[in-house]
Amino acid sequence: MGETEELPNEGIHSVPYSSSTLNVSSSIQTPEMPPNLTSAKNASIEEVAADLKRTPFFMTTLPDDSSADDNAELAAMQALLYEGTRAEIASGFRESGNEMAKARKWTDGKELYTKALMALKVESKEGEADETQREHDLEIVCLINRALCNLELKNFRSCTLDCQAALLIAPTNVKAYYRFSLALYSLSKFDSAIEACRTGLSYDPQNSALITLQQKITDRQAVLVAAEQKRLQREILLKQEKEMLNSAIKLRMIRTRTTGQPPEMEDADIRLVPDPLSPASTLTFPVVLLYPLHLQSDFVKAFGEEQTPIGHLKYLLPLPWDEKKEYTLEGVETYMETREGGLIKWGKKVPLLKVLSCGKVEVVDGIVRVNVVPKTRASEWIESVKKRKLSK
Image (tube, rainbow, N blue to C red):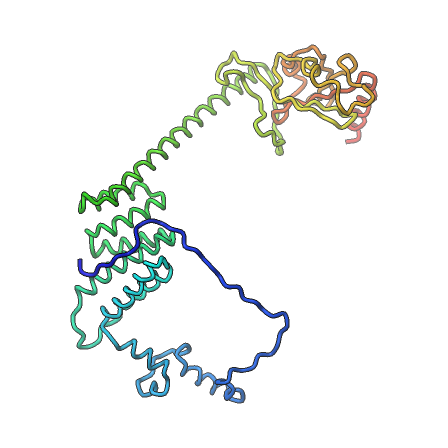
């Protein structure tokens, strides 16, 4: 189709990045002026400004040819400006861009293709030959190749814009459809990516790159659809489990309350086991056994509603830190705090459900808290709790 070139295979590759380190001396010295500027040392501000404007970097307008005779840099710039047609200048930038693309220097390649496209927009010189077709072909090639650079640089949005611009002037360009589709795929716009593949294949049904990409997008869509369906099913299941759990708690007349800062319990929570969707299942609660006189505690992840304190104390006692051997099955008592802030004694052989459904206690933030104290010091501890309550 006129201008063509061989570029690297399609695909996204990482581009190594290197940066130089600027070492700054810790001592600050007043720098000397460059030799070519020593004459400006005693010049006025106006004279320095006028001299700078004769330097290409600071020019605001391009002077006539006569003023460039004694300025080599300016002469070179003017030669570049006036040598060659728009197509010739653009072609030179394009070829340099191709070299950068082959070397996988995508940023440099992108800049050179951009310069080629800009050269095509410059107003043609008087008497210049009509190269409309060549310029047309160059514009398409540069847009498509810049799209490749943007693709490799992961500038997917810019890649789609370049491909769309190319397709506006070359609606049947299959390479543009391929890169357009690949960028859309990378942006997770799968439906649009499939449509781009289909349109490209309508012009070239045997294009292996488009066929492979279309299958890749289709497979990815299938995976995402399956994952979404699984997520929705999981949401429905969790909602049903939550409704069944709340119903079970309500039917048992268990009072619950949440605070603004519940503790982090990971996967420990109130559950119906073994089947969270069966009303016949057993409620289990996370239970913290507190030893307030010694500032110690134990944690039972799943304390069944029909289980008793003694059933768990059997394997928890004796306690490793109990040097005086005060904590024994026969020598301890268990208490729970009431909703009003008082205390209720929980018999060691009484099922958890019985004390939770009595109406005097509540489960706070999904955790049952139980105080375990030695019988010989129970009165002492109860008095200290009362005093703390009165002091508040």
